[in-house]
Length: 207
Image 1 (cartoon, rainbow, N blue to C red):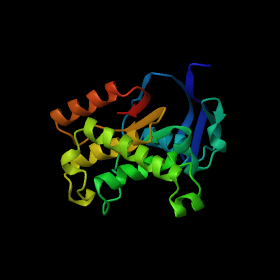
Image 2 (cartoon, one colour):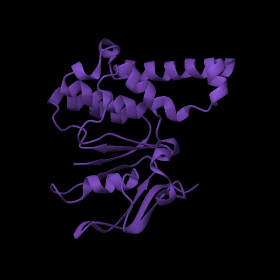
Image 3 (cartoon, helix red, strand yellow):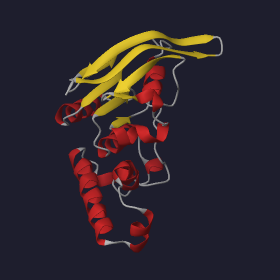
Image 4 (spheres, rainbow, N blue to C red):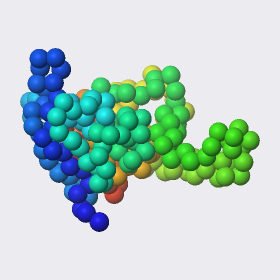
């Protein structure tokens, strides 16, 4: 198996007359920490949006685990093993922390509609596994105090951790972090860095 998890070749994207990304190429190895660094407006978030399939490149292509990512619809990206956080936090504000993390686990749902409707044994076992995995993330990131709290009532720093927790709940092979420590104090940044080191995955960030 190749050690290359993600590769981008000659990525460019235009928005009207604006060239937001121009012939960007890179490779991310399994287990590697890979960082995009540049000034505001350099196109770092745009690259993340290309990987997430929010945008389609004007030229170039992206491969993930040997598969052409540019041929994958946006809703299927998480199921391939890619999770991300956002520069501007994207959570379901009127749902609890627990509910947000359970939504993240949805990519592992392999039971059909009728089995879920009848709540068969396999569905019951899958629900137990989902709950256990989510509770592990809650315990690890010390979110027990907030598990049943609506996201709308949480301070900014906690929301950042919740977004990370939701991403980790998908058990991704590649974790994309868009300015993960922006707006956090030193203690919160240190706690988040510890979480990155402990989870065994490849991650990429933009600073």
